[in-house]
Every structure is written in structure tokens, then in C-alpha cells.
Image 1 (spheres, rainbow, N blue to C red):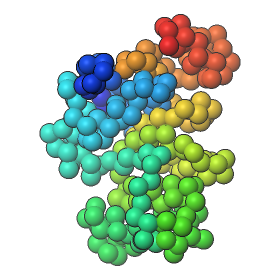
Image 2 (image 1 turned 180 degrees about the vertical axis):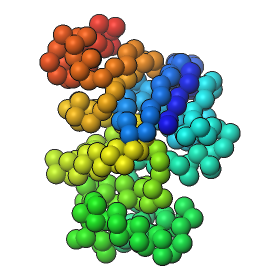
Image 3 (image 1 turned 60 degrees about the vertical axis):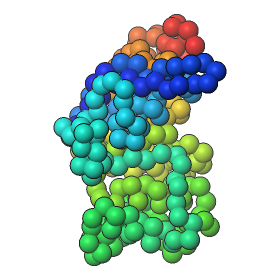
Length: 246
């Protein structure tokens, strides 16, 4: 599972002084479950996800990946985790296939294991047409597919997705969504952050709404809509956040 307990993170700003980005955030996600984290820009979503992934150290609280504390045992935790963002950060001179295989070796796979796993991921994500194209020649959608395959090469048990469809067209976004659903069917534990409400409504089993660094409510999409009296998650999100004050 993925478990966040009382996470808090503050940063020092020259003009504003200490700014609390995340304040006492807690939630648990079970295998085979997709937990959505929704919030306005600056709500603390990315900071929360980076603490879960071991990229930021919390000031207070703990983050566990399958029972492993990401602060105390970062390498062991990261071996169980795939962290996907909207920023691909690929090496432009490597071909798509080379990029994925390279990361397989970094994760400790043998050359043969990395090659076989790469072939399987490329089939799943429909990457045959650009397998041998250099990454700096790829479109944003195909770059994101390479990024996903690179992140998933070690077949992690837990996956954190920070706005993975940001900037993608409809076809590329659907491919990413289909991949997420396939991983859920394989009993992966998934945390998913997005600004696209219909994606969250379609994908997520439960949703936590993060506002000004704190989770204001956690429920299924249907329960959130019932609570707000709205018929879709767009209106529900606006109402729940608006009731507190943006």
C-alpha cells in the first residue's frame, strides 16, 4: 500500500516568510485502488507526491511504500515505486527503445530482462512506430509514453502519477488512462493527481480534495457529488472548494 501519515512541509519565501505547502496530510491507498488527489494550483499536490516518492523530506510525518519508510530507506522504497510526471526529462540523443532499456539496467535488471520488459511495455503502450526514433524528435505524447515505460520498466508495485496527461492530446491522454486502468487490474497501488475532472471521475475509486495544504474531504466520486448536490465532479469540486474559500 501507499500510506501518508500527518505529512507536513514548509518552505521559506523571501517575501512571505515561511509558507506551509502541506499541512497534516494523511491517507492510505490499497492494492488495486486508484486514489485521486485533486486541488487548485498551489494546493500542495506536487509537494505531497514528492514526499511520497522520497524526493522531498517531510518536516513532520511519514510516507510508506509497501511498509517501507521512504525517508529512512529511500532506495528500498524507490525499488517498489514508479513516479510519473508531466515532465518527461528524457535524454534526447537516445532512441525510445534505448531509453527504456537503459533505465531497466539502472534498476538492476539484466540486459536480457530489460530488453524483454521493454518489448512488452512498448507493445502495451503502442510504441512500435517510434521505437527507434531519438527522443528529441518525438512529440509530447510519444515522449510521455517513453517516460511511462521508463518508469514502469521494473514493474513497481506502487505508482504515483502527477498530472501525467498534462499537455497531451485526446488520443495520447486516452492511451495513458488505459494504461493506468490496466495497472489497476494488475492490483497495483496508484495515487493519481490531475486537473482534468472527468479523468478523475472515470478513474478514481476514492478522491481526496487538497486545499491550501490540507485535505478537506475524502470520498468516492459518487459520494462527493451527492454531498455537493451536483451531477459531475467539475461542479462538485468548485462548490466544495468555494464553500471553504479559494
